[in-house]
Image (cartoon, rainbow, N blue to C red; front, side, top):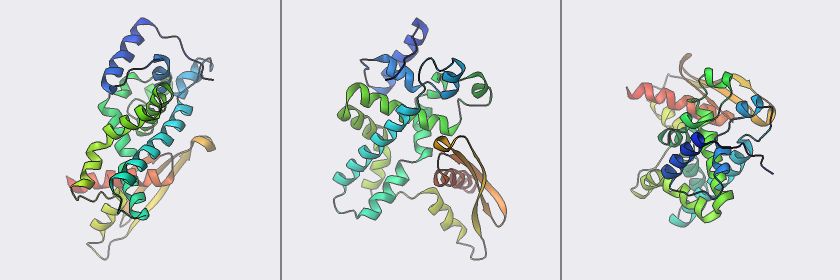
Amino acid sequence: MIEFEEIDASRHRVLIQLEKKLGVEFKKLELLNNALTHTSYANEKGKIFDNNERLEFLGDAVLELASSTYLFEKFPNMPEGELTKTRASIVCQQTLAELAERLELGKMLLLGHGEDASGGRTRTTNLEDTFEAIIGAIYLDSGWETAKNYVIRQLTPEFEKIGTGINPKDSKSQLQEIVQRNPSSKIEYVELSATGPDHMKVFEYAVKIDDKIFGTGTGRTKKAAEQTAAQKALEKFQK
């Protein structure tokens, strides 16, 4: 059972504004507020109410099923391996964090003082987790169809790239292609750190090209951290 924090008038206005941006009306506005509650904030309050970790877990599952269902139905001739790669290239940390930024979720997050002071409102993992938590909240409040439709609306620009024949590639594959243009160049991914409890690890990876760091990234999995590092490296090549 979710323990909700009481919502005051000022916070209520913030949540109503977010509702309009989402295009989803909540029966229980407390669920939306819970999706914006970082563990650091709940811990500072003595865990009187829940943080958004469980909603993020649920939202992640809804996101994967919704995107998988869309791809399965839209591209009946696409083999399983391509379906998996396509989904991974679309439903990635970078995309979800960008969607969260468009909604300005960072400004609305409830953070502990330490997390806020250390840049928590713009941290990629926080933005990704919050976006997934909101999907979980929509699912609990309005059911599968509403949650699925919301996911599809948000990811439509990425899905449309497939429909126009643009084959989305993950950042690591794109970077690999660039590096391979010089046969003597070598690319590798190096783990810089792994912090947090086992069930909530955050990994930091660097991508090195010819022993020089071209990008670093964080993620809840090693693969996600590598993808983010590769994306940062790609941005340097594109400048």
